[in-house]
Structure formats: structure tokens, C-alpha cells
Image (cartoon, rainbow, N blue to C red; front, top):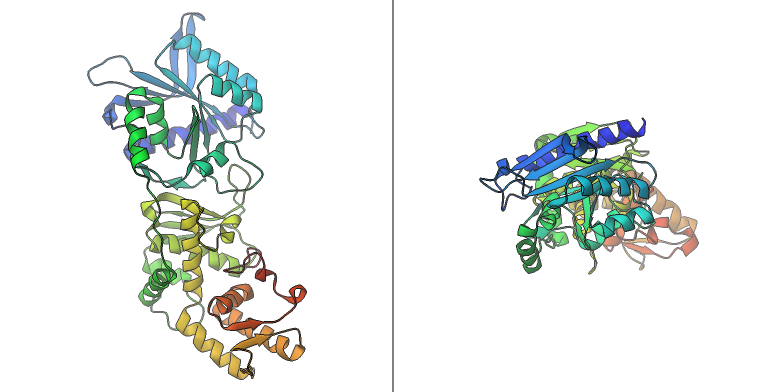
Amino acid sequence: MNSTSRGNSLEDVFYQYLLDQRDRGELIFGLYPSENCRIYKKKKYYCRDREADVEFDIVLELYRTGRNAPHLYVIFECKNHDANVSEIYVNDFSSKIGRMFPCAVKGVIIVTSRLQSGAEKVARNAHMGIVKYDDKGLEIIADRRGSCVERGFVQSQIFRDDNSTKSLKFSAYHDGDYFGSIRQFLDSLDPDSAESTQQENERIRLSVPFLSIEQIKAAAREILELASYESGAVDLVQICRSLSIELRFADRAVFDADGVTILGSANFGRKLIEINSHSRETRERFTIAHEIGHFCLSHEHYLHSETIIERDLFITRERDEIFNYERLEYQANAFAAELLLPDVEFFKKTAHFRCDLDIRDRGHGYIFVDNQPCNYTPYEELLSRLSTYFEVSKQAIEVKFRKSKMLTDHRTRSEQSPISGVLSNLISSRHI
């Protein structure tokens, strides 16, 4: 696909995104009725210098009630490049809007990659907005109270470092501030609304509440009861059916705008879960359970849609500095673990297999393992049987043992499961 076709593709999806936001009332309608916010694609304006029309990718015209001329033009220039966008494009865009609109205009450059350093400086000095848009990204809900996505996370979207993070559908920068929603961003561009909105945002921020593990367990039990679960591997397809969630599978690899693999996604408005290609069935089951968790824990209050990437599987505990979106992922991970390994059935089958394998408490704990074959071999067989019975990874079983304080592990570090290091609280991202 050539650069023109790629640019047109970005225009199409971003234009539709703006229409969707308008229909949901998430443009800047605090000061303007919806009919006073007009959205155009390939809009032309007459240029006296050129004595001809000049076309712009996408234009938002804001009108005060009763006025015939726009109060503010927001001009969007779409650059859908694989490589970072160079300075020449930003200079050209800045010059073009400067000739056409001497005042009451805000230029916004939309990218799917990044700006080169020179282009970034031009955009900053020209007080342009910078938007990174990813149609497959996480889409948050934001109202005039603020966003559940913090500044640091949004900043990583616009000026990313080497660490892979979840991609937002919309992230923006303007005059030193970062925005995770189109409403907040447009508010910042409109001088009539920016001050009041900023004061309101400073008073209150929308945050994700803490959920205890007991609350998450209770939510998982409720869903298992709804699906009439009794024994064996949890039927995730049946659970989706019970919750009226459409579950789709796609035998393909899907990547976000930064090349990060998307394992699955959830759309709350459509009640849809889509699962992409997985290398292991046990990891696929965990991904499905994770997405079910978002629905069952009422995360639709914070997200229009969500995606899961491999890095999300490393979010295994609450931290003081945790991002709000990471708290959502932690809660979904914890829910998935409780859904796939229900306490009552797990403890019953563990006791049954433990007896079959003659694993007894000889003064070292309910389940003991060290490097001796007489202890290591039956322990590995116990993991295998439980893994087969519940259709989860051995690592997930081992984590359940540790969290339930059922395991005494005296293996040397070189012999221990790789999970005992990085993912000691939940799962191994490589073997889910």
C-alpha cells in the first residue's frame, strides 16, 4: 500500500471515530450543541495566495449558536507512515494552515508511528496538537471529571521508550499536556472551555476502585454457578453463552500500531470477545477467561473496548504506583485464575491425586518437593494430572499451590520452575 492509500485509510478510520464520538456525545458539547460541531472529510477552502482551493484531510468546525461563521477550526492532517514522520511534512502542514487561517484555528497532526525529533520540535513550537491513533487500541471512557488513564501512560504512547505498553486508541499531546480521550483533547484546544475543564479535572479524577481477592473470588463463583459448573475443565464457551457474550476466534496474528501482538480484545458495547492466534491452548483459555473477567467485574464503566497483550500477563499484583489501566488488567488476571481453578473442585482433586500418588505430609507440609526423585517425580505427576483435568498450564497449577500455601518447595534455584522468579504470583507468560 502506497503512502497516499495508507493516509486515506487513516483518514477513513479516524473520521469514523470522530463521528462515533459525536454520536456518543463525547466531543466538546459542554459549550456547543451537537449540531454546532460539524465534521468534514476532504474539506476544501479557498486560498487567496494560490487562487485555488486547498484540501484538508479532516476538519472539525465549531459554531457558536446563532453564528454563521465557525468560532474555531480544528484541522487534522493524517500521516500513516511506517517510519517516523519527518520534519518536512509538519512544516508543510503548519505553513498551509497559517496561510489559510490566520486565527481561530488549531492544527493537529495524526500519526500511527512517531514524529522525528525535528518534526516534534516544529509541532511543539507551532503549538500543534499531536495525536497517535490506533484503531485496534484500548479505548477508555472519559467524562469531564477526568480520565482513568494517567499522564505517564499517555506520554508513553506519544513519545514511547523501548518498553512495550498497551496501545491506546486515542492519545494526544498539546502545549505540555497529555490526553487519553478526544473530549479532553478538544477541550484543551478551545479557549472558552479549557480553563473550566482543567479546574474540574484537578478537583476530581476518575479512578478504578480496589477489589480484594475475596471480592474477585465471589465474582468468579457467581459466574460458575450461572453456568452450572460441577467438575472438570470450565466450559468458557458456555460461560460466554450464559452471559450473552459473542465469542469469536481468528486464526491470525494481530498487531497494534507499534507492532505489539494482540492476544485478544473485548468490545463492551457489542458484548463481543475476539481471540487471536495462540501457540498454546492453555494460554488461549486464560486469555478468554481474562476477557470474561473484564465483563464480570464491570470494567465497561472505564472502557469502551480493551485489548490484551503479552505484557498484561505480567501484571500480577497491586502496587502503589500502579496505573489505573494496570489495575483493570490485574483484576482480570486474578479473576481468570479463580475462574479456571475453582477453589472447591481444585482442593478436592488435589487431595484425590495426592492420595493416588502417595504424597503425604511427613513433617514438611501438605505438598513437599525438593531435588530428590522420590519427591520430585510424584510432584511433577501431580502437576500433570491437575493440568490435564482443568486444562490449564502446570505453571498456573503451581501458582495456585503457592497462593494457597499448599506447597513447600526446597528445590535449588536451578531446578525450580521458571515461574518462581518473574511471575511468582500468577502465571508464566510463555506457558499460559
